[in-house]
Length: 78
View (spheres, rainbow, N blue to C red):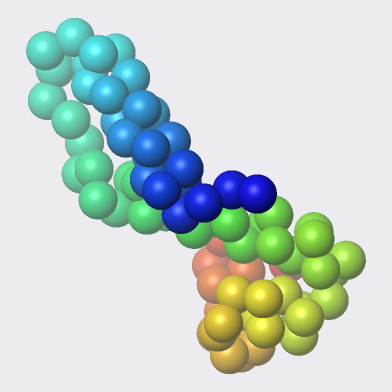
């Protein structure tokens, strides 16, 4: 079973690679980039695990169904 620390380590490794790939260039706004990519991937994954059921996915995520629908729309996952 994955632990929260595993996710943090994965993000850390990915950011290390991102900075290596920059090769001295200035990074783009990192916070927005990471949050956008992590959130979109998480929403798509959880929705799939919930069999496409938005109410179930919202419960799994611990957010309101309307919030989930807005985020799915924002990320064009509907």
